Image 1 (tube, rainbow, N blue to C red):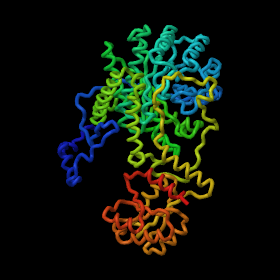
Image 2 (spheres, rainbow, N blue to C red):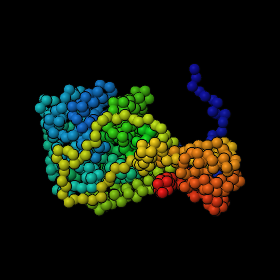
Image 3 (cartoon, one colour):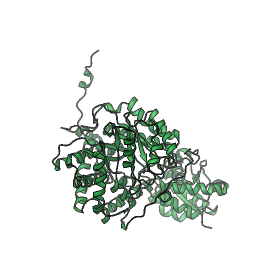
Image 4 (cartoon, rainbow, N blue to C red):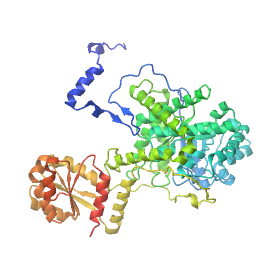
Amino acid sequence: MTTDLPLASDFPQATYEDWRKLVDGVLKGASFEKLISKTYDGLTIEPIYTRAKNATLVTARPAAMPWQIMQRIDHPDPVKANKIALHELENGATGLEIEFAGGAGARGFGVIDAGPETLQKLFDGIVLDAGISIALNPVLARENAGENLAALIEAKGIDPARLDLRFNYQALSTMAVRGAAPSGWREMQPPFAKVVAGLMRRGFKGPFVLADGRPIHDAGGSEVQELAFALSLAVAYLRMLEAGGVELDTAREGLSFRLVADADQFLTMAKFRALRLLWARVEQACGLAPKPAFVAAETAWRMLTQRDPYVNMLRATMATFAAGLAGANAITVLPHTLALGLPDAFARRVARNTQLILLEESNLAKVSDPAAGSGGIEMLTQQLCAAAWALFQEIEAAGGIFAALQQGLIQGKVAATRSAREASIARRRDVLTGASEFPNLREAQVAVEDVKPVTLAATSDAITFAPQTFAPLAPIRLARPFEALRDHSDDILSRTGKRPGVFLANLGRPSDFTARATFAKSFFESGGIEAIDSEGFSDTSSLAAAYKASGADLACLCSSDKVYAERAADAARALQIAGAKHIYLAGRVPEQEASLKTAGVDSFIFAGGDALAVLQDAYRRMEQP
């Protein structure tokens, strides 16, 4: 069998110029710029790229080595957490991500404390030196999880050098989330460095300190902001360890990173690649030969939805796919029900199997840096590097990461990005399937464990902070404003037996109204307002009678521009007389807007409009006497 394919030689070589001619023909005089999009950092994304020339591999995991499949252990009861941990390891997980109550990533749960007795129960029966990875996430100013676990390991007679144990001390990122610190960073550094140096002397390999970018992503920040934050954290910890007497080369071995992977495949891949290039530049500036850093990934908290949570499985799959291809050393998938409560065995199984399938069936780890040479991802990587380095320099010029937090430099930039992101969510330009688009008002309830969330104040030794305070990088979920409307609708349903409704006043034939009626249904039901569909109407008396029979407070006209011109004004007057509290029209018809408003149309709904504001206003109108 020959591999020669002469057929391709019969066709002329396509060029970029040929493509542009075809595109210009489709645009019909419109600007080519409309095809160029921008990220929240202002980075440009072209519609097409050529292959990047002279591209080199970004060194990450060793060739063909799979990433570590990390599973969250976050049940407050250490005995039950232990059972979960053993089950995870027996069913494909290769590592455990230990979350403690009150931690920045605990998401309301977590092992209740990190005392010796709790850790003994938590790790009962787990063979720590059997090749599994353990990632602790200690909570600042509470029990020292790292030292307590180290003592337990020594008591068991286990050689620390045989362990894959990441201690993940992350004081600065924890303080950034809380907006408070026990003292100034200068005062905290010596004891912090002493703890790390002590663990090194006891034979533990580490890494010990985590440069965690999650606070930025959780708070709605951008890729550039997350990269600059993580880089600034790493440099601050590097200085701390060196000042504490740790050799610079040893100190950098004690650091690791964590970034967030979300459903934007290409930006996620570019972000993980950019971090390695940025860190290599820092190493070179320190006079060190670059070595591949350990970079962990966690799927995004902010993209999780409470409504239609099964879509979270798809989001997590895309995020895992991107992080895996970009060379993440370890990946933690947040279970799809985590925004609803403590995940049950099924949700944990799905999180685990998401990774197992991508590794064992899709073989994603078999190729090193498959994005190398891809014009689009290479360009995004370089843009991210340049912009993140500039922001990193700005943070350093402000006095470093702690000073930048005190000055509000980072929080201000994140807040601006979050505001822009929330505006896009409100206008449904950034789509959250199941929440802001394609909602299901009749979705079945999803099971979670019957465990109440654990708050820091409820734990045994709540922290009292010194007056070192600044604006916190508080976590958000992007779907929450739409979910709040759905919650309000559920409350009305439970009290009255009926959801708030909008009558879809369809005019003409199905071919006239179906497109806009479908849009209107998704629009209103994303806010929990049930769309009551109807046949197409040609006379106003039938329309008015159907509206009255629906029992809805609101009405929305749906049809084509042509039918609107012929019938919408009469239909609006009929609906107004029939008692509609507010009349909407689906679509934009600028030339008819004035006459339609005169006839009784109150508002227009359309793609790109502020759906959230319209829906919130609809509830206010329905609740008026």
